[in-house]
Length: 120
Image (cartoon, rainbow, N blue to C red):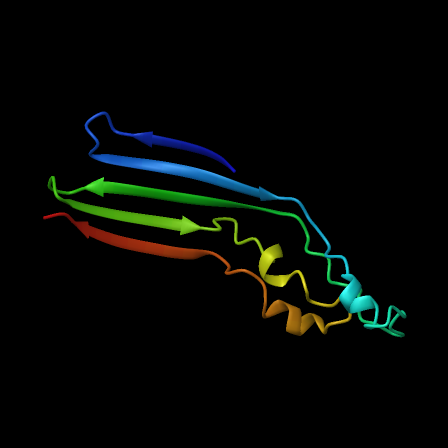
């Protein structure tokens, strides 16, 4: 992760730009998936997993303090609308899986957030 943030000297408003970079990776079959309990190889075992491609996403967030105790925050996540898969959530998908099915497991595209915090 690489980030750059800036806050107004009076903490009235601030912005942050964050980039998350992740290397691609492919899961390896465990012994349990490739061998039976008696130690013999399982014929035609499905141990070829989908390779999760590397990716980079950029997020832009900001806030503004309206009066002293009310903060309005916002964010644009995945600004570049990058299509990617999270390795920890999808590392056991098989490479032979239908690509339309794989698309259901991709991470969210560009999303927006708006928040209001009231401290009392």
